[in-house]
Length: 132
Image 1 (tube, one colour):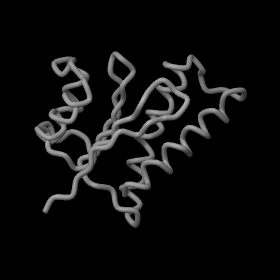
Image 2: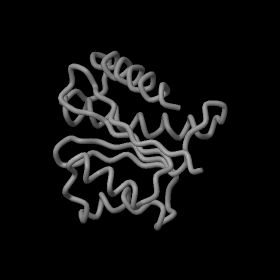
Image 3: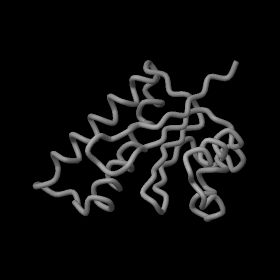
Image 4: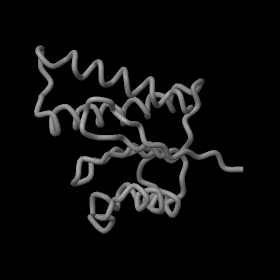
């Protein structure tokens, strides 16, 4: 049986959540997005994430939608003992943290905001790793 996961990670005091999608087919992922209330599925940037299985261009992607809903999608289910899987997840997680902090919180990365980035990265890493 195909091991997959779609989970919403709630981010406490911040006004947004993060969807993680691991090893879902494009059809399963589209259904998950619809359940989450994502309506802009025809947007070209959204299609890059929605059609990953079809396009075969990337193993992982991060995307923030218009309403600040966000998703990390990986084509495989990450395994804790596989360094490339965890590196890919952390790569996409860094994109998520950057967009949350720089775009939503209007806090570009610098000496004064680095700790905000680090705490959010740590929190999201812990929450996601609970499901792997």
